[in-house]
Image (tube, rainbow, N blue to C red):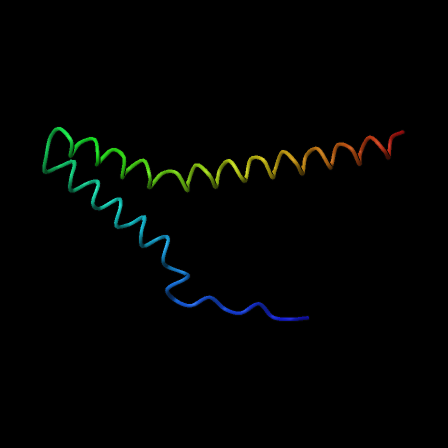
Length: 79
């Protein structure tokens, strides 16, 4: 069995760091300006929420798929 190579520190923290920078930039822009800065701040804050939404959607679809498999197995046993 081959071992998977370990990720470097940069690979591990690249996406969380980018999300942190986007969040902080969005908060600072939202607090310091009006007009276009408000729009950019909302976009940056929404970008930070997209991975959370994707994780919940992936988990929901995975749970739904597992429930269907369990139900089909149960139907086969009772038939």
